[in-house]
Length: 191
Image (cartoon, rainbow, N blue to C red; front, side, top):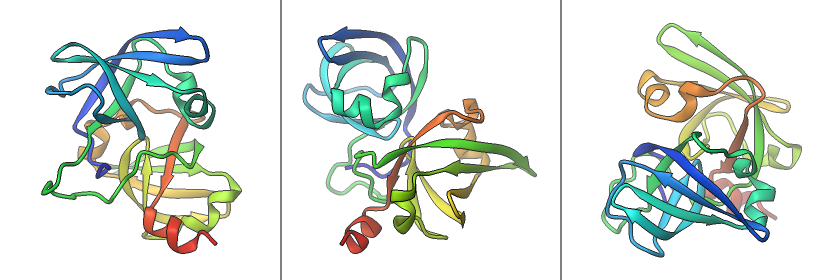
């Protein structure tokens, strides 16, 4: 489990296709990874499968994950948001995030307003009942608050710290975004 507070922007060193899954080597300032531990990579909960050195580790991305997330678009040199899993007693600064992506949305627009950035993200119809104004959501692993919901897209505001310290500083219209709805909404409304 994670909090949606990004700890580092990692860089993809290589991607190796093995049968029907991908092995992704990631360089990150996050250290002390352990084999078998969970790490959130742009919102996706993945398992550390090897450690090259204290700053480089690999994860395996399954066919299901490649099908349901934006990981199929990952490439060498790409930056991804990184968060280590929570430990008992850690501060929950964002909201509880599983790292189980519900769907992929598309960035409709990004616009600077004063010192912040207003982003509009399209989402698929099946997520509509879980997306509420002032509700929590995880986009590419980042815990955010939904400002407004308009038919098939939502509006969110990125403060300067979030923009500077996540991969949102690199996004552009039509980029695919991993969406995980708030777990409270998922379980209370999933009937």
